[in-house]
Length: 510
Image 1 (cartoon, rainbow, N blue to C red):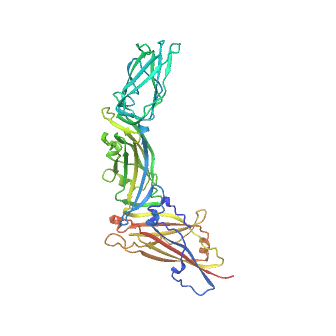
Image 2: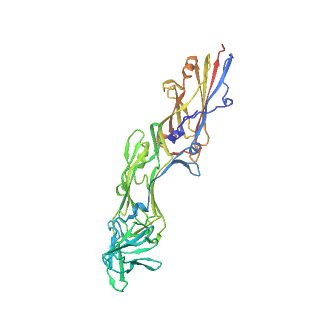
Image 3: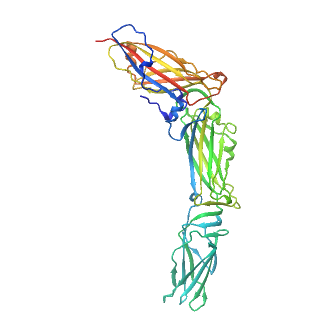
């Protein structure tokens, strides 16, 4: 019977009344005059506790409980993940690298992309295109001094065979350089070749090129450039106050946490262009903090820490921002426009590294301990209700039994609605009935529930009117104990608000 929306339920869950089956044996006997017959009808039986609700909450928002039962609403979401291909994607071999002389240095990639000091190739193949104008076979030994593996310099031998036609063009097979290490400066690779004819004469090739499909590394060390990754969107839809109609809640210690896991040997810096919080009323407030203006530097592993991950946490809290005032504005969403900057200083003398397994992850979290004070907080929600369709009803009496575990005075009111949301009747006169706060013990935790029983008489006309009801809007007005002094109290896991609602109907037989 419940249509309680768990996605909207955190603070509202403390007050919303769900429906269920009512054991009529739990209802006290009503005093009726002897008539033909009476019907006892259960309508509602529920108790909402924060602990029960936490088992049903889904998504990235959870309700956590400490060992003592105190509750904290938290959200943790990953907003950016980048691997090594984002920092240094494979460099495609668009143009062959010319080998202009028997000893040539060639820039294998622009310095604007990176300044490589040391790197290990992965999934990279090369070959050589050679052309000779000598009318005999030419034997070639090609070396690359900067390229080594297992202590050996790269060295390959080729033969350009004369085929009675000049010039003679020759292209080698693909050669894998996986696992080969290059130690270089300014991205220069040296090609040195010795070309000797069959008759023993050293010659220079007419043309020579190195070709490659792409350049890819398993390890790369040097100055690896400046990179900026935008992070834009809504990282959290808190829905904490969807049913908060008025009043205030003064949270003591809300916070937003930025965290970065960084396996790159490169500095990562956050640049916050905008961090904006929107309330349920549509009011927008910007997060203000010196760290919004300056950004935040995150840890990174050093050259002697390859394979390690450094994690940094940074909290926007009441000591360094206006986060407390913002959340007390009944925040619904937090939207952001941020950037993750790599090598933000652009200092080309700073040497960093990446591996093919490197990554960094940015996460944003919100944490709201349910510690605070409440002053005339008003929440409401809708439950389904069905009154029996019985003919010849003469009168009815509804019995409501409320129980309250919270250290707060609650005033409850309920309105009957039809399918078109037209108001049919109001359950209680005036502003509703008062449910006293549960008593607090010496540890500021309630010791037992308070209970309030209320009877409501319905004559025939009034019952016929409310019998058309399919929904009941229940509103709760809540104040913490001694709210005038803004007393801050914890909400605990077993705190709950219960309601049993039953009807006894006098029916006149035909």
